[in-house]
Amino acid sequence: MKKASIFLAALLSGCAAYPTEEATYFEAIEVVEDADLPVEIVKTVEALPLPGQMKKTPTPSRAPKSVSPEEAVRKGSREARIEPSLDGYMNAVQVFPYTKGALYRLYAAPGQVSDIALQPGEELISVSAGDTVRWVVGDTSSGDPDGARAHVLVKPIASGLSTNLMIATDRRTYHLELESTDGSYMAALSWRYPQDELETLRARNARAKARNARTIARGLTLNDLNFNYRIDGDKPDWRPLRVFDDGRHVFIQMPANIQTTDAPPLFVVGPKGDVQLVNYRVRGQYYIVDRLFAKAELRHGEKNQSVVRIVKTGDRRISLLRGGVDG
Image 1 (cartoon, rainbow, N blue to C red):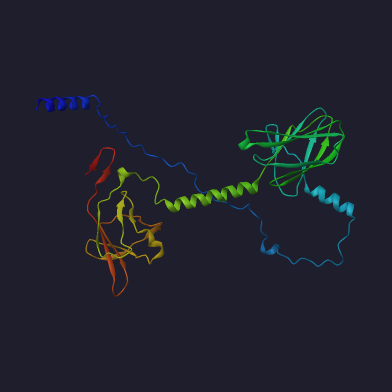
Image 2: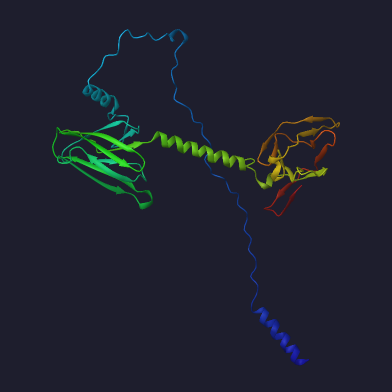
């Protein structure tokens, strides 16, 4: 008996030497979703003719005047040429809007290097110049490997020279006309890409629509939600899972298969028992009602009608941070 007492005392002292660590709790922090909102894409205003201006095009009395191939080439190049503009400068960089088939003009000077910067991430395939004797052409890159940017560098050896340059990448082709002067020169040029910007906006809108389809509402917090609703009546496959409100809207969560079945309409029951159809929105598996009600019914069918009643039982709110329920 004495030995057993000594063993028990030793066991208890051993347990006291290894105390259990007290659990630590942290207060919940609300996470604010910082996501891009969808944007509206509008077309550039197009001038339309007035009714009085819509006249019949006269039929030419003779065939159009023919031009020589040389004149056609000169006219086509002249109409495709895009000159630098004052509005196009961003600091020392002339930024052209990229258009397929356009002919961009670059002015260079002897002893000066002009930088042709491509789109970040664009891979340079080849560079071809018409005059490689009197024009020095090279290429380099900037940035880290994940976001590298290719650069084509050009420099004339004298003024009064002109040639053309073609740059091929994994995304597009650039055509440039180079001209050297004895004074002014373009330090750098680059492009902005309206079609890529449009595709980025469209992808952003698609992501926003997909996100909105998964979100029943913005700005909901658990502290403001009231789950005091009772669901009674029949038990069809479309019976709601839960009902709650945020003080302004009522959210009715339906089963996940509600989108593949006949959804029942929602009726609000008045104080005198009168029933009226109420407007609501469907987002995912939720009915969202833009008003509060004390009692409502979901009905489906005619002869063997299924009826599910939703009754509000109180206005208490959940308070998770305080560990209780507000009444």
